[in-house]
Image (cartoon, rainbow, N blue to C red; front, side, top):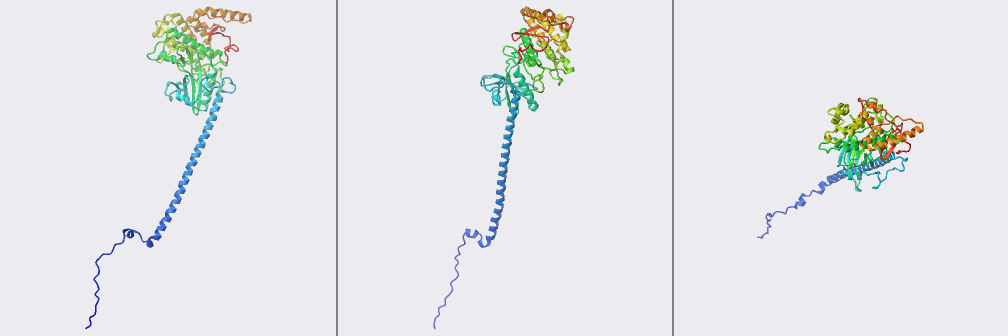
Length: 470
């Protein structure tokens, strides 16, 4: 028998096959996913391109807005600069070649920068007063100048005109009993006036502030004379003449030696064209209650006699130490019970100095008060006549000298065919029967001592030719 070899198939192997790589298993089949990938990439490009376009457009618009803003700001700066130049030109016209403002620490009257003023006032933290016009600061400059800075409240086109007129007005006035202007500042919408600093503040503070040290009788007399000197200068020796319109104790400032100076010409009358004017005008009622001329309230006609009335009230305030309106009573009306009786005159005097006043001087002051506060302006004296009485009362030695000068003038006038209306004698200063017109025969050719010079008072309110004119 032949043996056949039969191949027996081997049993299947139980060894497991190697699993595919996880990366390979996880990766998508390129044949299956090729078309969706192309679509997503195309969609991404379509989204990105408009986004970039919008971003570029936004940046361009932003740059355009910034450019327009810068151009407009520069335009406003140029416009403001032109306005400032125009304002400065208004304040200092070409007709003032000698008095144009100067820049630099050496000039008495100059233009200051806003930065200088801000630094000198400690960023406007040194407030020394407030008013309807604005705020006043004490300023100490690096060159040693100490000044009072008046910061105007509102600035408009009309306000600029008023500001320029006030600068022009103050630059024209030069008198030892007027607060001097040191300079000004015009910066965009800010306006400043700089005055000499008065170390002892206002007369009002010394008369009415709590805990005050009373002013002596002699100091009060001198203050009355100083203020009358200032008004005489304004009424008679300015060219053209000027009236203040707001004489009151808060507008009388005192320096370190208690020399009085008149301040605040914000209400001083000036014509609309910028030139200072003294003609009577119809205007809004201004001034301070208690000091206001009763005739002016009715007629609204502005004259120098309104200042004379206010001065009379101020003089009474100096004597009594009472406010112009106190306890709802007008000072002039309150005083009448004392001024009509010579025996009660001492009761008028401020109680803080009731044992140190001069009775003769008190009688003269009361007479002046009653004369100045006559209801009719024509019955009131000129400030020149008032000043003469004050000088004679404060220094009797001047009486003989004044009479000698008067006699000389009287003889000179007679030689030229002029007549005299008579002279004021000291005895005439005391009223009789309460009639203020007793002094109405006072001379219109009397002289007063003003700024160490005897100045002629003529029959006209105009100052003598070329004397103290500006």
